[in-house]
Length: 465
Image: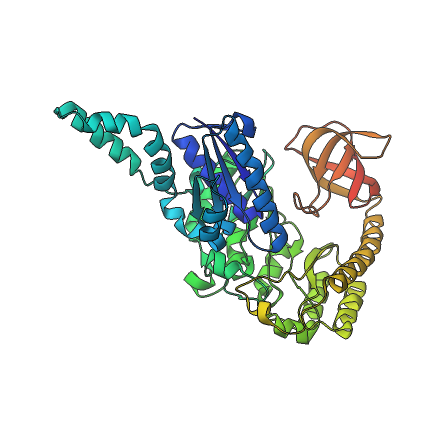
């Protein structure tokens, strides 16, 4: 049978999808990219905020249309299922099987039961009507097949991000319990993987030719605290950098209060680690940070930014901010606006507060009107657009190391053509920009490029010797 996958949400969820693909492939299913060719469609959902839930529901309904054609089984997994499984079963009868994140230990047992119960129903009925030993053995064989209980396996996953980079998930869950966030209730408490298991996977990825590894968790800076009683991120990065074949290492989502001196020095002194910090700050007002149950303060965040820039030349700092949190006053917002103006962050994402049931903030008073939230969002992003333009101009004339991702790329609304597209150390895939390159180079190789221009959030460059 042929299986197609749709993966929604974050890169951490994508790793789960890749393990599911590996599980099907290990059991001799054919993986297809087009849903119209699939006998089975698996949708791995996100359920973090309202917009993600809407996208998931729309995707399920879209994929359900293929059941009128070739698709025999529609399976839905992931965070949306974890939060709303019972409601989804009632409202989406088109789906044959819902599997919660917390049920992943039995994922293959559930899938094989679904498929084999239908495919073998006639065979089992025939067998039950017979009494000879041969048929009895055949019946037992089928039942054993139905009870197959294989697990998702990091070492057996099929990388879906191309040949240039792969994600390396080092922990699951979260202990921060921010009052606006449902993730701890969906994915559970923070649980680190053993360092030797991570290194084994990293070596496997390097042997397959991946030159860039992107280290992910809900909060990478807390890696190891639960099993080693201290943050081990700096040590883990150092050990990964010793693996032959790995050229670039990134790590994402480090909370400001848990960025240690050891981590800063490791990034500063290790040439393989991209000088890039992704720090979800959320706000700068102390009153809002306290309501969010964040552990940092406005002062500590400002000091951290200053320290990173003093310690690490050309460091790139990316962050996410939230506007419209319950009780956010005009004064709180203006303080945030002035912070953005001062910080001049290299990369910045902003989103409006989403009222999520089950979270502490859901019941907070002084909820902000949607129009006010949108207005504040637009004001922050307009400011950041100007800051980004200033930051991009500074790179013109510089020579940067670039990982070539593909050939024959064209800039939209541009008459110029470019032979290649790539990324610098400043660019996380699917989040940041790219660099369009004049000059020929093979994908998955590194070249030196001189920056000649930019387009919004993307650079333009040419290969130099």
